[in-house]
Every structure is written in C-alpha cells, then in structure tokens.
Image 1 (cartoon, rainbow, N blue to C red):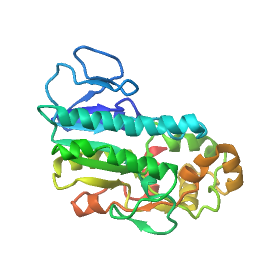
Image 2: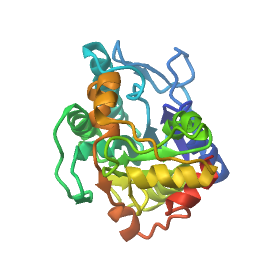
Image 3: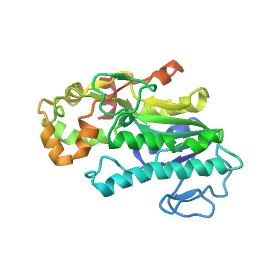
Length: 294
C-alpha cells in the first residue's frame, strides 16, 4: 500500500515508516516544505497539496506540537491545540474532498483523553475526563469527522507513554536514574499506561489489516503499572537505586499545569479492542520492554 504519514520525522513516525517498509508498504511523508510534486501542507494558512504522486491507500496522522517541552502558558496551550485540532481538521476535510479517497485514516490521540481516573480500568468505552489535555484529545478525535462522514474508515489511536531506545520520555528520565537519583513521582500510586515502540508499530500494521477496527483504539500494553513500580523496575534494569521521590509540590512549582496532566495523573488504560481483534503483544511486560529500551 501507499501510505501518507504526517509527523514522519518524529520518534513514532521514524520507527513506523521503517516498519511499514519492511512490511512491503511505501510510506510517504507529508512535508512542511512546498513542493509541486511532493505532498506538503501548511496548517497555519490552511493549505495542503497531495502532489502529483499516485493516490494513497492509507493516511497516518501523527503530527503535533510536543506537549512535554516547556511550561503550558497560554501561547503553548494554543500551539498544542492548534497543531492537533486545526491540523486534523485540515487533513480530514481535504481527504473527504478527494475524488479517490484513502481506505483508512489513522489519527493519533492520547490516553490523556481519560483524564485523572485513579485505579479505574479504562477501555475505549470509558467516558472522557476533564482538564485541558482531555479537552484537546476530545476535539482532536472529533476533527476526524469529515473523513468518517465521507466513508473513510477512521481510527484514533490513544497512545500511552512510548518506550523506545531512540528517544522520548524514557530517554529524558535515564540520566538522573543512572546517577542513582531516580524514584517515583509524587506518591507514586498513579497508574502509567505505556507501550513499547515495536508493539506500537505492529499494532498500527494490525489496524491496517483488520478492517473491523474503527473509532478509538487504546495503544497501550495490557499491563499498566503504578509509577512507583515503573521507577523500581527501571532501577532494576539499569542496576541503580531508584528510591528518591520527586515531591508533587516541587513538580508543580517546576512544571505548573503540565505536572498534574502528564506526571501525576493516573490513567489505567487497557487495550481491549486490540486484544479482542486478535493482536498479541511481543513486549507486554515492563521489565522486558525497559531492557529493550535502555
């Protein structure tokens, strides 16, 4: 298949494009650089061109402002929202208007959709939470509506924390952990939903092949863990103590609203749709996934 990918140069996009190629597909990046022949777009101006290349069978939309870089002031929050909601709206409407439409649109979302839910097990049927991140995720997913209405199968992959040896949140955590300064965040009781990068790529391939999957799909391991267990397991893998907690107050003073939304929020998401459709995880347990990622 010919597959158009936004955010192809990011952590997930790079790994996914490589995986798609090994599966015999042809991934093509939707660039930000104007090119008469190559697909490009400009979200701020509302322009998009699919170039002169053959039509695409699948579109995978991963692009979006990095939510974990910098404090969430008003300007940062607007960039987060616009890059996701406005970008998805532009893409979905443009695909809906094409004469030869793709079969499938896979659009990224996040388990932040559920908000802070304590110990509650969360499936794709669970209601949305509250707060800025949850609201953005809701609008992000709703922005796919033009494509869905036009008959394009649409899937919103709600991503948990992606574990990878090539970057992402884990690689930012490693320096203090390697110095023996790591530990749980806050009281450490909050659940963390995660997925190893290879399983994520395989799951996207599964969605492409499994035509029954549509709507939200939790892209997480079937074994979410509490934050204190994550810290302890990471310490075991790299053979360093991991007992120094980062107090909630200090995290809030340092990071503001982002601390509560990304670090202290508890999300116990389960991959019900993936498992019920026959997908099996190669790295369901945290210890093995961290071994592969460090």
